[in-house]
Amino acid sequence: MGRSVGTGRRARSGKARLARAFPLLLALPVALAVAVRCAHARALSPPSDAAASAAASPAAKAKLSKITIEAARLRRRLRHQVDHFVTSVLEQPPSRESLLRWDKPVCPLVVGLPRNMGDFILRRISQAARDAHAPLAGRHCEANLFIVVTPHPDHVLKQWMARDPQVNTRHGVAPLNRFLHSRQPVRVWYNAVPGCAGGPSRSASSARSAVSMNLSPDKGTGTASPNAGMGPVYCQNGIDTHLTYGEIRSISYAIVVADTRKLTHVTIGQLADYVSLVGLADIRPHAEGSGAPTILRLFRGPAAPQGMTPWDRALLYSLYNTSQSGRLQLTNMEVMMTRRIAP
Image (cartoon, rainbow, N blue to C red; front, side, top):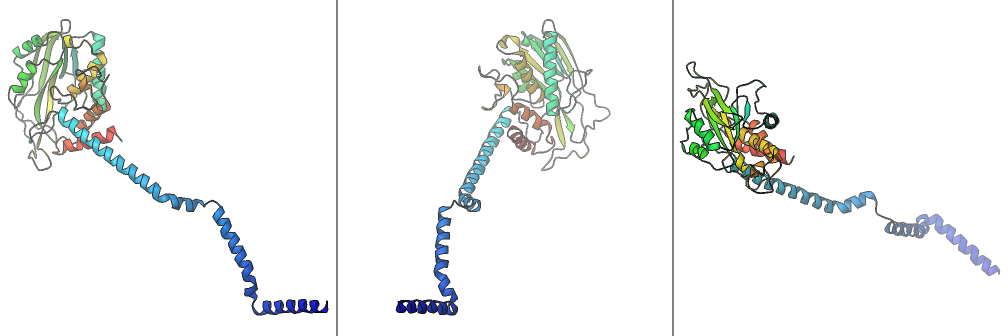
């Protein structure tokens, strides 16, 4: 027993001396054990939010990049569609002329329909003009936008021409002949006069523009006698540049003739919106929008819109809210239309 006790004392004494000489050496196994347990705990515990975010970041960035690329691709496609729509429906003037629109207040008059239906169309035209920021005359005004609804359009136009109206045929008589002999359900004639980008500066001797019309609302037929003054216009700084036109064209009056024999499947709302669009913008004959959703497809099939579409309203808005004297108006219109269709 004494041996064993002595051996135990020597062992304890050796550990004491070892602890005093190498205190870190004895603590090493404990430290290693703690480190192993901690590492094991970290391996079993779920990753922190920061670690998860760091791990998911490449995938999230890839997804966001894909969405951004897809959105840009869709916008480019929309811009391409808008370009086709605008160039297919708007009458394109010669390179030295501006796009045509109303620059003086529009005063519409509906002839050939019962009063309640005529008032309905007038309200729709007025609302379309206000939405587009087109100039609109007050309640008491001299008519310059005539909407004639009749079963005898050729007879109306024959009497109209018999009064020798001063129609604008600066681009030849072919457009006028197409209008007079058209078989379309709705046909439109725009009389255009030149003006100045900064406002009209007519000579004192030139005639004022005046339009008068005498139509019978009961029979839907009658005569029209426009007397639009076509005197010379003198513009200050009226010189064309690479960016602007010195002179601009504006509508002095327009006549829209609808053939009731070809409106059997058309509602009054559709007719009102159709004549609103063609009455406020210089629309090509037979234009149908190049596949875009538009009221211009009214006579192109059974799936016609019930009224003006966002594309139609964006077209009118961009026409009246871009610089008419700017040579880049068409491009600026397409940019504005794209933003209004898909903000």
